[in-house]
Image 1 (cartoon, rainbow, N blue to C red):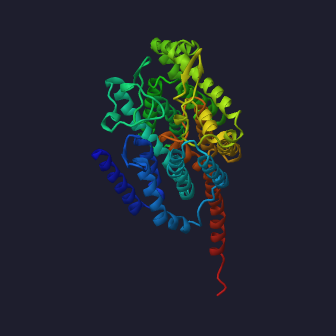
Image 2 (cartoon, rainbow, N blue to C red; image 1 turned 135 degrees about the vertical axis):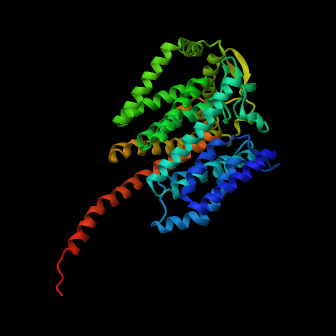
Length: 472
């Protein structure tokens, strides 16, 4: 507990000092770094209320600093950003409250709604309202990559020494069950500061494309060396998570970048592909372990096969309960209610308790009904479609970042079908910041390009005016 309190004090001091010294907008990259770095275990329990996690401390401090300095800074820069998704968010919040009123566990649902408002929607609002330049966007991405680089170093230690930094923090319960010390039938599965190896792998699948984009923007050799080191470490870590979903999400992201990205990104992807092939040839055991894991997935009697089949069973039991109750089909059983419902149902010929939910899609459907699932789908679809459209509309090379953001959103949506990834954990903080960037980035590009294009004309006009002979 003392360690957590000390860390919280240091975080508050760092954010305040950065804002005073450099301004609020310049503090956003540091905040992005810290939001990803700290585990959920870094928390101070408040009996009867929330657990005061370090992430919540960061968001609350950011909110205060935004109203103290951030709004004034943006006012000087011709106003705040307009968030295109704000009306859908209002509908989402309203429907979560409707679901909460009808919840099977009202208190739990109410705390969940308030925590999501504080943890994620407020994060989206602060970042979306405060970013005023493309340079800030690049720095925020660097903050994410820096945090994942640090986590990757911890992941290497975890893989080699079987020691996790989470052992320094008080143990907490998660939606996903983790084997002691990361050990399982797949060996040691690294998770760094995340709640589960799958969540860690999902965050890596988002951060790798960011790092590749930043390499294309890097001017110094030192920064390129750092970013390439981060990419290689992140690939090692995503492999050591032993998680099929993040592997597929990462591969899918890289394919999207190969299609939508520029020539430089494609060259980097070619280099990575060559390194992967060389590694698989030189270390045949890696290829064998991947084949064995996917082979086990197709065997329903293996633990991996049972895990895969469990996702489909979740949909079956969700449909069975929702389709026989009109009200529950609309608003569900209440946010975070799944783990309190005590459902039992058939699975592979046996009646078993449904006490884990390995799909955010199924969980949203059960907890907020078909309407709640549709609203979340609309938010993600609108953000993804807008980003994809901007990847074609914006001029090169600015449009390449849109390809990165689109790949991030697609990867996260894919992972929502594989694990309960939505609504908790550092990777969800990353998602909402990515969406906030996606919504404001095109306007920033066009604004800055407009200034650059207008500047030569202004200079020419000034030169012609000063060249006029005086009539005096």
